[in-house]
Length: 133
Length: 172
Image (cartoon, rainbow over all chains, first blue to last red; front, top):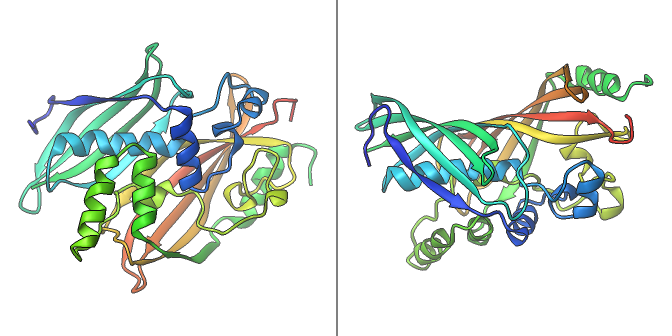
């Protein structure tokens, strides 16, 4: 792990399967039908069921933690949804270090992140701040 | 109520703005944390969490757990959900209106670790409502702020999120 501006976080790839979307809706008690009812999603203008916004944030957090290594602690996770992501379409989260400063016996590292669908559509962008001992 | 549902959303938001709602969400269990982790594909977390529990060690939550949970309520019953499946609490200012909503994004500040056994409280408020014009029509961006605390009042997490309210596909 190299924490200096310009360093790149290894991409995290995942496919939000229908089962994953259903289970995430269930565990988060999110009954919004656009996430599991394809007929309803189509009635709202979507071609398929929609990936939950908070799942984008979760995957940004995990992308950074996997890179940052043991003992790293997230301080801040921010993201904006840029385009809708759909079930069964592979997504890739990638990040780049933007700033590093000394803090609390370690470093406070900020990264910008992008989540991109298999066709190149940027679904979410964000910023994560992590303390690395 | 006005004839314009988005104007009505803004009017309701103006009445709610600045009012904070405090609620006791409940106790976090190891099962809650493991189910969350497995649902997002982090199987290793669940194995480590159960091992920590068996060894009598503290089980710290995945960092995005609190803000990942949309609702901590038991309900509402199915017949009280909006047609899109959301409960009134998750869809502020829109009850009975021909609108739909999507999430715009979120900023989460993590102030202290959350662990199994903690009882979580939250204070939620509506911070703003901005009507905007997009390529496919008008929409309203609602700002929501939620602060999470433990039993002693120690701040754990602060979340600022935006919810985008759009007119109905059928012309609202």
